[in-house]
Image 1: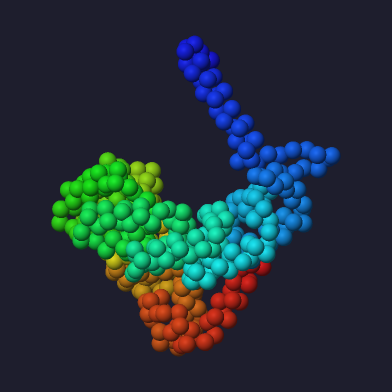
Image 2: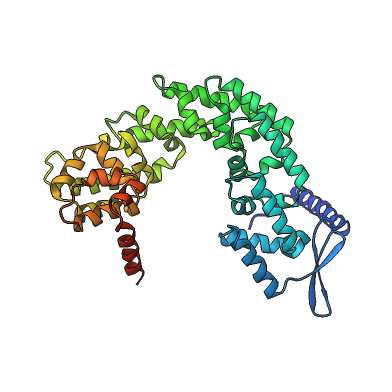
Length: 400
């Protein structure tokens, strides 16, 4: 047991009593919901209204309402039900329907369900205020997709326009060679970085320039804007860990293609993935009779192969097993010796790899396996009209 000094205990107790008094006064003013028991029924008091506890049927109606509007995560639904217990708006389905429809009209292409899941209290803002904020954002960011920005960061509608504009100007001064508007569209949280954060941003930019003297750092930042607010010491450490995990690789080139590796868990995840992937490719290379084995370093540094380092090894292994089963050894051997082609095939989804299984069962087919994987869905379905039906039958058999 840790015994605190008397002076510390006194300070803690004084702070606790002061906090308790503030809490009690806030409850009296109606700022904090209060629960009370009255004749066996539970009520919730919020501000000057007293709300009866939701019945099972009401809760089900609210749950169904949000399910139909794209709110699928259990945690988000639970939060919305909790709000319905204390805030009148969130149990008034007619008013909620109007609010949701208004957001859909103002934010075409955005998922309103996702916006509500991330920040449900946005619905309490009046339509006039929301519309004014959207118009202001469109004025300071004329080329950005405002709907997508709000979907990614709904709280941007709660920020003062003058503050956002000032932060945007600061970013433009720090990143003169970048398309800052495009970066902010992808990472709206950048607009929340005030002038106090400009020093750390400048430090991170300098650190990246020192790490990659021959690379276009500004282009890298455009690809991965979150590097601006990462810990520079961690970035340097990850660079060194990747260099040791992939000896002989051009780490600078790799990280220019896949800059997210600079802030990933390289020590416990990426380095372990590299070891497992090397064993997987060594095994399949040996089975296909490639004496020198698969050049793993060239594979992960060519084209889209770098994404293999951020993909679960089990996923890559399952795709390779499908290739071993349905692709002729001669074709597979050719792919293993061409890293750029192999990386494109392994980055395809399992739904796309179904085409290989489908073609292996076809007779007198003039379409190559490589072309089948890289072909657009529309073109492939036009060439093989019965493929969609074949794929549906395969999925139904799998479910059974």
